[in-house]
Amino acid sequence: MGFFASVNGHITPAAEARVSVLDNGFTFGDSVYETLRTYGGRPFALSRHLRRLRTSAGRIGVTLPLSDQVMSERLAALLAAGGNRESYIRMIVTRGVGDISYHFDGVQGPTVVMAVKPYVALAERDYTEGVVASLVSVRRNAPEALDPGIKACNLLNNILAMQEAQSKGAIEAIMLNRHGEVAEGAGSNVFLVRHGEVLTPPLSAGILSGITREVLLELAPEAGVTIRERTLWPDDLRSADEAFFTSTLKELAPIRAIDGRPVGSGAPGPVTRRLLAAFRAAVPRYCD
Image (cartoon, rainbow, N blue to C red; front, side, top):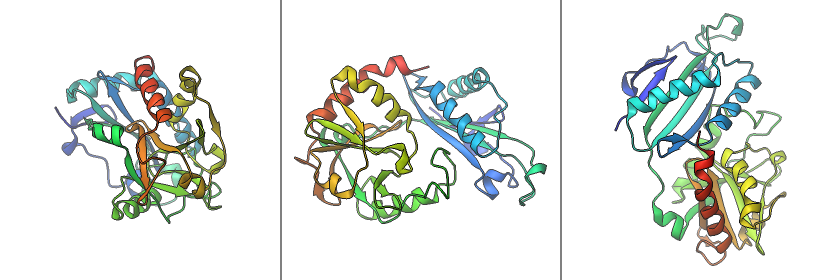
């Protein structure tokens, strides 16, 4: 098993991979990314992640010059080099190499980086018993300041939220937007269940359109579950019967407590368990 990287198609062990210190991704955080995982060695929802990667890049004025086929071929070669049973995958696109200035017309790029390493799942008890979350004081960036549709590599907002959550013993931070509405997790989307109905914040709350969130919205009717987008407030979380996070790496992670206060019975509820089972059963048809 190994940790390998591809920099503009050149594959090396990750520790030996090199990007210029003049790359805008390093000097300005001027870059976008996607995080994926494999199932049975196959990337989950690769075409959707590549679509979002191109969208993010386009929104910062960067054109990804490689076709989806070339990106897929580079990833396949990197996965083969890694030789992992299952892999964590990170794709990064930076504007390229500049001169540490705002003279973007002189930047040479883009730089396209991929990295793979062994995928480490949440412990199975996190799915059977639930995880602990924290409602943090760090607010989500306002959409007027940073378009939430850009999955940017500059993650200081998320890092500060996670540091606060971890200081409280939580594995995920729940962030509010500038209006005090529930937005999203630092690395996930948030859902709650009330009276058998699943509710999740709308994109207008200033959140990223998560790939697993997207897939779940498609799968819910097949599982006989109704999901509605609705503005949510902290009190909605506190009074929920169930709650869970979704992300490519976490799948559907039940939340058993928020800041020490049990959610519902304090154990994963029937709706969450049904959706997790439905998601896992559907995974093969979403693997590219």
